[in-house]
Length: 173
Image (cartoon, rainbow, N blue to C red):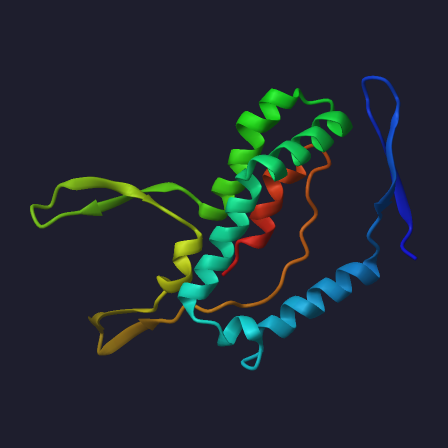
């Protein structure tokens, strides 16, 4: 049985739940072990195509903005943190989804050497776009860059906005 945490509504002191699992260092160690196992060549994640990884991350983002899930998360967080429900729905839920999709404008230089702002890209889409680089010979050496994951991080997130910050701990592809 996990130790539990009691969460109350700061506006009126009512108990929202006394069954919130309170993680321990053992829980963190199990999570790190599971993530390290995912790095192994034999893992399902590594065996999955980059397109399928992208679909998984995109689906998670879709679940954040699904009206039923969004309302449930907003109700829980607005009651437990005291943030107005509408602000949570309008800002935090979309920020969580965009954290997974990582909607960022991409700068590119076209053939006329002018800077273009391309349509947004998504973090999920980087699953199949992180590649290595090679650089021209310099002092007799060819430089090669190989991008690959280097390890696992246990992330502690802020108590007053976990829906918004949670994806930031998950987006490593």
